[in-house]
Length: 277
Picture 1 (tube, rainbow, N blue to C red):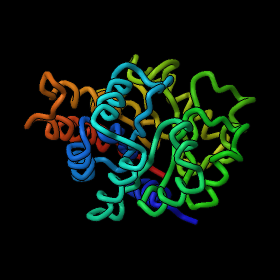
Picture 2 (cartoon, rainbow, N blue to C red; picture 1 turned 90 degrees about the horizontal axis):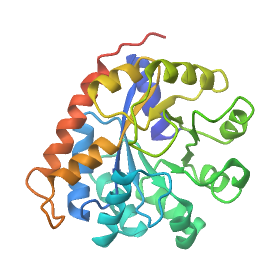
Picture 3 (cartoon, one colour; picture 1 turned 180 degrees about the horizontal axis):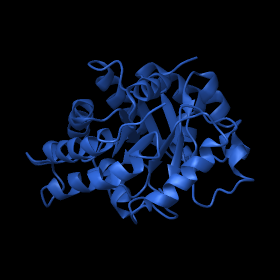
Picture 4 (cartoon, rainbow, N blue to C red; picture 1 turned 120 degrees about the horizontal axis):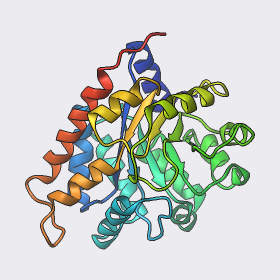
């Protein structure tokens, strides 16, 4: 069964360009502003949207994304409200793929069957759950696939040839390659190393490969787009939100526009790279 994610990557392959995948924390800095930003991302150049599920113990996230989760939680964000963001977004956008990204604990507490049913009904297309290893696929991955959601797995610089087939076995939608070892937003990726790693992954799968962690500028995105099927930008957008806020954390007149400006700029970088075949 084809999802919006499958459709979007197929469209972009036909266009001969990589996808721009944007990440924002759901409910950051508050529900209304978060919804406003998510609604304008497609027009700014986002091809797919990842929405973070706020969680109190996000061990793979750097300080920027951790702080965004805490801001959202302080303003009342819950998993239920995050699903609500997607429902509200879908009222005016039926085509842009939406992926929820986060950790298993909030889903487990919500209840896996109920979560998958509600996520599908809200208009979510895929899940990235960073602490669900392939050995635990029966917990969430397989039920998600059965519900018609893509389950997107992370591959990292430390994922070796022996481990990679295990990581890929129930992955769908795309493979998310983490371009640097460590936490989100901590360093810049090396384009040559990324290209070699993407080629290594593609030797094992026909799925698109999107690259994230450390992409902050249009120049970064241009380099990554030469080898990858998708470029993921997150910390740079979350940083823009943080820098736009009042001292007490409330949004300002600059909050939405600051994110849009970065997405537009990075989208130009991604779209400047033309691919063949």
